[in-house]
Structures are given as C-alpha cells and as structure tokens.
Amino acid sequence: MDRIDCFLNGRFLPPEQARIPVMDRGFLFGDGVYEVIPCYGGRLFRLAHHLRRLETSLHGIGMADPLGPERWREVLEQLIGQRPGADQSVYLQVTRGAAPARDHRIPRDVEPTVFAMASPLPAPDPRLAEHGIEAITRPDIRWGRCDIKAITLLANVMLREEATQAGAGETLLIRDGFATEGSASNLFAVRDATLLTPPTSRHLLPGITRDLVLELAAAGGLTYREAPISEQQLRTADEVWITSSTREIVPVTRLDGVAVGDGVPGPVFGRMRQLYADYKRGLQQGRGSG
Ligand code: PDD
Image: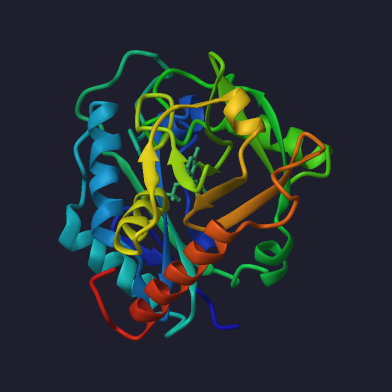
C-alpha cells in the first residue's frame, strides 16, 4: 500500500517521521482529549457532531479548539482522501502540549499538540449481528467526568482487558447499582418492547452512535426512553446492545455467562439494524449531511 501520512501540528507526514517531545503533557499526564470518527465511502460520519463533542471535551479541560470546524474538515478530508472511497476510521487527538518541566499545574502559553490519522475500518463481522457477543459486568472504577472524551484511558483499558481474559467482547460498567455504559461503548436495553438507554450525565460519554440510534428509533416509530437502567433491569432485559463509532450496534446475547432474553439477537435489534443500515447506505450514496 502507498505510504499514508498522518497530521501533526500543521504538517502531513509519514507516521514514522511524526515525533512529539517527551515533555508533552499527553505523554506525561494523559492531559488531552480525542475523537474517533468513522468515514463511509469517503464521507465523514456525523462530523459536525464529533467536532461539537470535541469542543465540549476541550472546554471541559480548559482548552479551546486549536483548529476550528473548517480547518478540521480540511485536514480530515485530506487524510481520508489518501484511500479514496474506502471505509475508514479517523482518530484525532489534542493535548495540552509540551511544557518546560513536569508540573501538575497547567502551563500558560504552551502550544497544544494536534494529531490526526486515518486507518482502514473493516465492515462489522455479520456473525456479530447474527449471534451477538458475550459481555461481563464490572464496577465502574473510572473517574467522575466520563462525559469528557479524555485520552486518559487506563481504567477503560483494564476493564476491557478483563472482558478479553474472560473470552467476552465488552465490559459493561455498574456504578451505584446502575449500568452506565461499556468500557468503549454506550449501552441500550430493551424491556417490554421499550428501548432504554441511560440519560447523559458525567458518568458516561454522550456517544454519537447513541444519539443516532435514538434519532432512528424516533423516526422509525420505536418506543424508546432515556432512563436509568438498574443492574437488576439489565440482567432481566429482553435485549441488550452496545453502540460505538467503530463497532456500530452489537447485540449482547450473554451477560456474565447467562443468556440475555432468548440468548439470540432480539426483534428490536433486528429493526434497528435495518434502520441503521438504511441510514448508512444513504450516507454512502451522498444523501444527508452525515
Ligand atoms: N470510543 N463510551 C465510551 C467510554 C467510549 O469510549 C465510546 C467510543 C463510546 C461510544 O461513542 P461513539 O458512539 O461516539 O463512538 C461510549 C471510541 C470508539 C474509542 O475510544 O475508540
């Protein structure tokens, strides 16, 4: 494959030539935020939504957006233009930059580090939608600002590793008796034919895929509600799904070794899968703004 450049601080260059200083606060403190944006058929999926969330995350850590929406679009389109028409995932990250010394205090007058890259995005394995995945539950050991898409992901990584060790595909997180989200995904449950997802709060990321699923539910006439899901309600749900930009919508058919509902993806998932596929096809064919 031809060389694929990444973007670092105003330049496009091969990843092996991209360098950041060891004093970068992203490296030393995890002091930064990120986004992951899917791109289908050369079109960035819900770019405006992702850039708004980026701005909110930056604001949450006391930073301003160093590029702004128009420049971001130019940069990201140049990156994805290197694999024309391919489905890709764009990763972008902004850190507070490199200060002269390691100091917890936030430095003034430091240039942020701005990085972005595009990678191939394989289509989800159709077997996942047919059979679902196994998930485990764990206490949510993360911090109190999970609404900020921070690069500081050690807890998420450790929680996800527990799923991997258990032969499962995701870890669902329980805080104060309520399910919040997955280690890298949002959470949906179906009970009595009603689609449920926890309301946005500081305990979960306001997922772009989550919001789209709610929009599609409304447009498709599904009954849905943003409401807290207790651990007990999760365990007795008819259906459980997870959503994310890279995994789309995945049914969870076993939870902690116990079948969810009938142990197969349910009818509400089947309907949402259809709605999502139609939406994605429209985007690939140039309908809608993403
Ligand atoms: N993560 N919750 C968490 C903790 C996440 O890390 C993610 C996505 C989501 C879903 O958000 P969205 O629908 O906007 O992708 C929810 C990305 C994919 C990642 O870290 O790679």
